[in-house]
Length: 68
Image 1: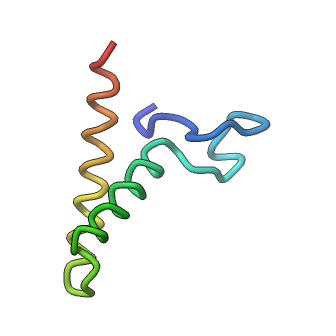
Image 2 (image 1 turned 90 degrees about the vertical axis):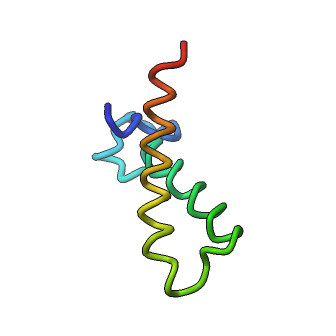
């Protein structure tokens, strides 16, 4: 799936049903954490940090598919 599937094991393995995190969600959250630690924590920079976090997550998923 485009979202990378479930980030963590769940009883059913169905992220939609279980309401769990996707790999994309997890990667974006980790990227956002790093961006905030790097100085994007100011209120005026948070919207751009969020957009960048999702772009980084998408790039990581794309690379993950391309790497054997």
